[in-house]
Image: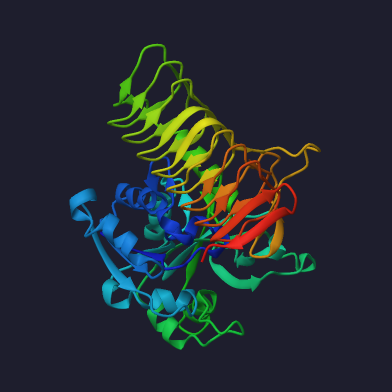
Length: 431
């Protein structure tokens, strides 16, 4: 059966700022390709060649990259703009005219999953012939999720939002990949706004079961990669997962006395100068200048048109058009596009007490659960010589960090932040 796919890709990704200040979350580069491209290629491999992208925030970046789908990927891609953000059911409703009469796969555009999941989901749906399928994930803290209860035949019975552990409802949470027959649009039409003033997709599924006599089968993801990439450090996990699958390919110009170990991709137009040591898995894009005497360690992705000089980079993502040129150390960090680091700028990625690094996410200090986590630098940031950035700190887009400055707090966008020998830290707006 030929099947279409609908990908919800309209959100802003506020928890990932400043990374998403200049691009939508699905366009964050991982292992050399946008997150959304990895998903689309996985769907294509599962036999889906007709895709609707429901877009909104900075949608032109998505449209310019993917186009009609034919030219780059030999698939068909259409777009619908989500004008209002009124919940997942509301967003899915935009797909009604695209779907017409056949079942379709629907998923969130910020997911990265093992692509075999798509094949298994379609196989399970075709075996059971239900009105819908919901993918599920076992979680360790059910009280933080919407928990799905299945009956003895494996069909959805009820959904309980953030249940008390006393209720003993299990630990199966919604994993964000679905298959539905078009009857789901009737359920969406009957869905009313929730207390959050949104049209909740969980309510639509409840209506499908209890008012339209539909069945929704559960498919549980086990022992396969799944991430909703809601937090910055999850980008590093996703990048690492993808790099583990990379094949060695050297298309650039490698000078004498360069050591390359493991699976490393180096794109066209990139020159790697003498004394450079690269440990795979790594992805290095096109038209970069690497070295001399650079040390690029495992799980690093570097975009296009970057300069990495006699510096060390480890387990990090460097977007295109950025420079890490002179005596810099970057570990477990994300550097967005058009960033220039002054000589001697270094990042701390491990607390002296070796406790987990915490990061401020939308005003709340969140435990990353990991001991090594560096910084997040937004687009168009510059640092002066010998700047130092402490663990888990974020520097907002278009900011400037002065020479000899210790960054021990998050820096808002458009901020001049520097150490005055007499007055201490000075903060000035650049707007």
